[in-house]
Image: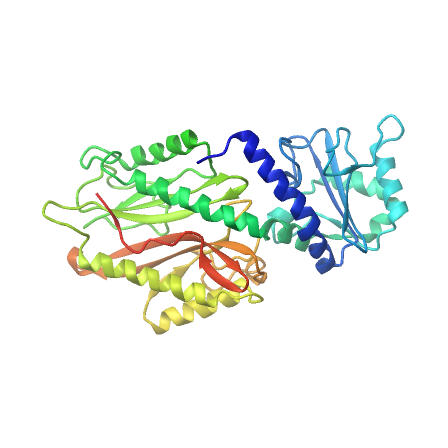
Amino acid sequence: MILSLERQTALRNAWLHTRLETILPELLDRAGIDLWLVCAREYNEDPVLFSLLPQPAMGARRRTLLAFVRTATGVDCLSLDRYGYPGYYQQLWTPSAESQAEALTRLIRDRDPAKIGINTSDTFAFADGLSQGQYQWLIGALGAYAERLVSAESVCVGWLERRLPEEIIAYNGIVQLAHELIRETFTPAVIHPGVTTTADVVWHLRERMQAMGVRAWFHPTVELQAPGLSFAIAPGMDKTPPRTVIQPGDLLHVDVGFSYLGLTTDHQQHTYLLRPGESDAPEGLQRALAIGNRLQDILMSEMRVGLTGNEVLRAALAQAQIEQIDAQIYSHPIGTHGHAAGPTIGLWDQQQGVAGGGDYPLYDHTCYSIELNIRTPLAEWGDQEVRIALEEDAVLQNGVMRWLDGRQTAFHRI
């Protein structure tokens, strides 16, 4: 059941309270940052800002300035904002008494932080949200204290990737919703072979997500493979498919994801259109899916706390090569965003490793979309190569990787 907007707001705000009290102090300690500044203007928000504002706030107001000060007992969460966020941030600025820049200068002078973190990064977009204009404004307001500015990259990424236990419990149910969306789509109620097109299915998914009360975070794709019709370089990359009307004997591939309660899903699964007289997909296709499941197992077994994304990628691909699996791995964190903050574990066109994002380590209590594909010749299709592209959401919790709601091990059938 999708909660009412009022209940969603209450739940997300309860999570925010807990996150500010438990996660943020750990992150500031880990980074050695004494004061973290998040500064953004209306319609030009820092991507981290939305995760820090209590609902029903929907963005910055004029200039929103939040300050997080590390203390001996935790973190003081402060607002130098015209409107404020009572109950979440202590308001430090009285517009009638001083300017916003004067309030910031007073805060810095009173707390005297050795390191002031700002959101700038060459590697992660999520940690690079401070605009040039706001950077110059901060420099002017801080004066000599500007020499103490450092990148808050690790705080931004850590804040976005880390999940509370209660968020993970909710995530299980959200992924169940995603799986149910796929199951109900790939039925005769939606797909009529010889009539329905792949675009029809895509727009059904969009309409269905809107009706459910969740938000699509990208436009879904539905592609087909069949004898004589091969696949694109990567899932979703074929812009001119030779046929779009779905026929018996087709293998359909879907890529779909949505956001709900501030958490995001991302899934790729397959459906087989039975030919007359068939009760299941050809054995060769079933073996191909089993190979894809094996690659998932290999990757999950290599994902351990402390290893970098590149280390995980190399180990998983090495084992796949030993087992003679023609593999590509391009997995990513998932959470507040779809392609979320955290370690990159391969890109489809960078299988040797990804500089920067791939050098970031895996931390506990983080979530991932296990995204990959395998290719293998299919005897039933005249040894034509088939691609099985899979994507399922998983969590690294208490040092162990597990699926949030299982995975596809058998084809949907129509």
